[in-house]
Image (tube, rainbow over all chains, first blue to last red):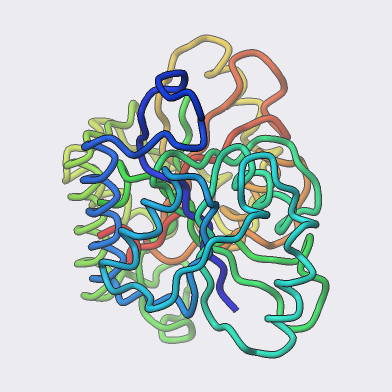
Length: 164
Length: 164
């Protein structure tokens, strides 16, 4: 099973919205994210499911992935909101992996969570040394049967600068 | 200081040359590596120095980077040959970092060494969970003053599939 962690695109500056959850993508954030989505489509990527943080900037990012035909299924998933712990969704992920019900899954969320989850999946601990930029992508291969935490393989880490 | 680890391109099949060190890149390996080099140039990457494993398939890869104007300096460096230990060149790297004599360095070499060195630089131990494909690239940011091993940041891991 392949797991993609995708960070939301460039959003309105923090503090410009009363409710931080409502900050939307800015025009540059939309266009860069669209280019990332088009490149993923060109490469032939398809997600069986996209789960997104419920925050506006993340859900808009996920909608752009959907509009680029990278998946036909998008749902919000509250464990992906900022500050979420991997333990909040790991059991769910393990069940999907065990059932072979998903081959490729994309999670759209926030930093530093995505970088930290990547570190947990690869090494089982967090050291803040994996940098996921806005509209950046992490690609991980989950082990077929072993414990997911600490045994996943990293095959992709990229920001739009290196991708589009 | 930024450190790029670049794996050689697709080479002749193992066993087809009496001396494995002399296996050259095949046509597909040359063309893919050239595309990777052109993309790096387009992004604006410049290496102050390229060091290459002395093996033919690595040195040919390094020459392609040079021909794409990514650097004006290329040297062979025996610690980069297969099976080399990071300890064989770490002291040299630390001196370069401490002198600020190099801002960007590219090392062209082999697997699993490049993936293992990446793990050592980020986490200080090897678990074979970072996958560097042929003509793939790792990008690391070294800490300004702290110990390099275990304190470097990963900002890029990509194969040609995701890059060109």
